[in-house]
Length: 280
Image (tube, rainbow, N blue to C red; front, side):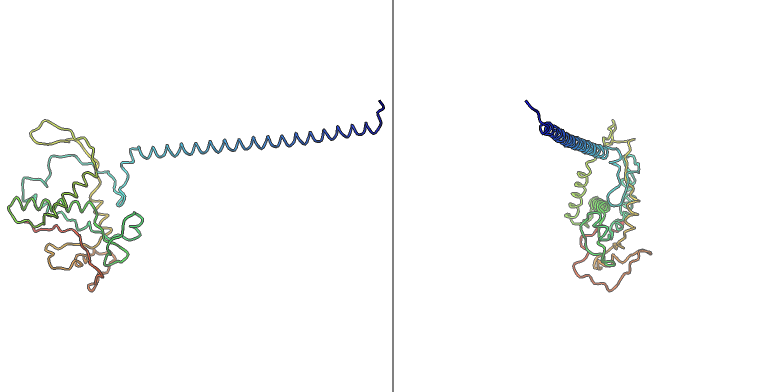
């Protein structure tokens, strides 16, 4: 077999072509392998970060839910803390055997400060519904703080019991007293206080002696109410007097201008506390 120069040159060219194509194939395969490896690496990092984020969020949520600080968070509206310690007691002056003193103390309970004027911006920020307009600032509504409402209810129940005890005509309608008793019942159920009160072998029905509870400060709530005063003061005998007059008792520095010729555009100021009574 005769091998020509053409055959040798053709063979050399073919080998070079194969080598070139092989190199290109290897290069492409290597690049694909590197890209696949990088993609897997990024995916693993992403999964790791995602799982870590989920675990951290679960941990934070659990710590908030079960931390001892959670139950001592400030109240939603006046930012009151349960930092006032009070003992459980058998009785106070409000249940004194001295009925004159007892009646005087209950009579002196004043819920006027619990009627407040809150700005619409503050109300929106705290998720409350709008209320009837405050006469001296149309950007504010009139509200009654719930604690004062409950204290008002206790006061009229005490008044009613005192009138019954003395054989006097009831000064409060039964439906009002019934409403207040039901409001207090609902508040007790809402609070669902689970404090175990220790019992003792005594003649008196008593429990919880020598135990203490954490309370919010009523004084701080009164301070909050005064900061948002509605200038409200109910007269001792309100019959026949315009309800608007109750809102004309603005303290110095309130910034409100009381207008004697103010005329409300609709039915005004219904459903406010009616509890005062002269001391017997």
